Length: 250
Image (tube, rainbow, N blue to C red; front, side):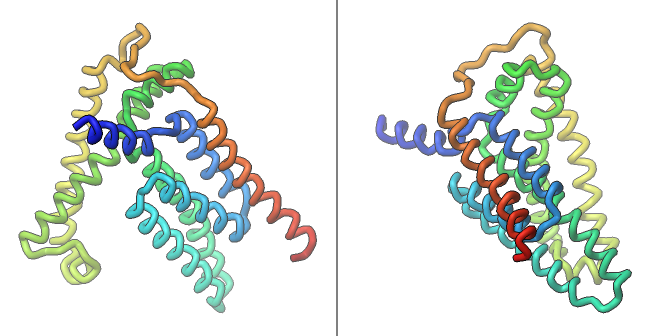
């Protein structure tokens, strides 16, 4: 029994090893880096690093979905380059440009939110002297997105029971009915979830003026700086190498 508890603790440490503040910094880093550089090679390098972060935390399903999403964007970008009409090519290229980079924010947000202890995250932000309003907002957001995802999964299962699967065929053939069974319940549940999570945050004392205590010790360690430092160097190094190659005409 003791061995089982030890194994469980070790498995949880894999997901929570990196300090929440470092995860937030990495989210900002990747989002900023991809917007700074317009190079597709830098974007591809950042994609590989992000998939590597998922794999490092044994999030196999997330890594697979992320790879498919990023791969789809790159294929679309390649197909757009063959469009003969320059105006259409420029318009679609601009849309793909923003989608490729904006998606990184949500993908990294999902990576950060997976197995994230909200209490640890709130305590970490409190130690950085974040405003109370910002802490409450971020705590609710990171709890809100996974909850809405679970609700949407339940809605899709309910639609299957009614004989209306949420797929491309039904969206084209029965758009109104599909929207009625999918969008309307999701909007209603989303509003209710937001109210419930806000009330939960208040119940946990996130709005108190006094400093909250934490059962777990939340502090930056050498391994946090080392892990984050390696990733920061990799991201900046990718941009630097690409700039050198471009100046060299390669």
